[in-house]
Structure formats: C-alpha cells, structure tokens
Image: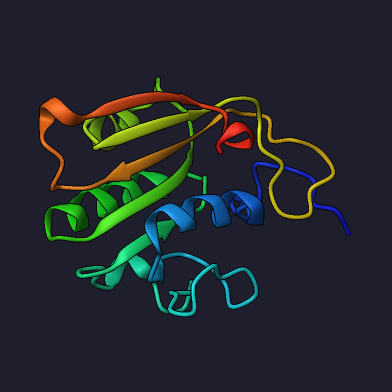
Length: 156
C-alpha cells in the first residue's frame, strides 16, 4: 500500500537513490534513527534502541529523523555529537523559519538545499515540503561553511 503523507506519521523513508549518492561521498557507518526494515546501514538504532540516548562518537552517521515535534531533539543531538567527533549528515525538511533550524542547522558545516521535492519511500506523491541535507562536521572552520543549492539528480 502506498503511503499517504499525514501529520499523524512523522516517518519519511529515505529515497534509496539519494542515500546511495550521499553514502558514496561520506561512507556511513551508522543509521541513527531507523527501523530494521528501512535501515540504511548495517549498524543502526531503532525506536526501541533510542538513538537519542546512544553515543554516535567515532561514527559517520546518517540521520533521517522523524519529522514531527521531536525533530528539534534529533538536530540538537546531531549538533552535539558533531562536537564530540561524529560526522552527521541529516535529511531534514527545509523549515528555515523554525527555532530548531536556527538553533541547530544554520551553523552546520554545510547545507544543501535540494531542488524540487523528494518522493519518500513507497509514496505515490512527492513530499509537501522542500528538503535539505545538513552536514554537521566540527572539523570545518567558520570560513569554510557552505550553503549549496543542490540538484542531486545532476550530480556527476
């Protein structure tokens, strides 16, 4: 059955083609919030394992968090874990007008605003919001931070 997007279900399964493209660049070792069925990495945390309560240190992390109110906590965790040495790449809605975006995303090492709207999982339509890939990497200096308008389907 195709997924219908509602406010009742905050999960948005990462498009496999997008994950593969980004994983080729970063080489992820941990999916910090997934189910066993949609995990993108062999090592992953499910809801029961609660990635918010786990250490992400020494990992290159993929994060596609639930898009409900808890997204603030996931972005905060990504920011904090990057300070501890993890590299975290998150796929999030480009909600530039929200507090969590200003508190935890605008100072990321890189933000890639994705052209168009993604089709998540087995949905029969595109998402009703724009998306961004946010890269939290504490080794990047302020002068090296980037904001990119990105069309991943045209990436060589």
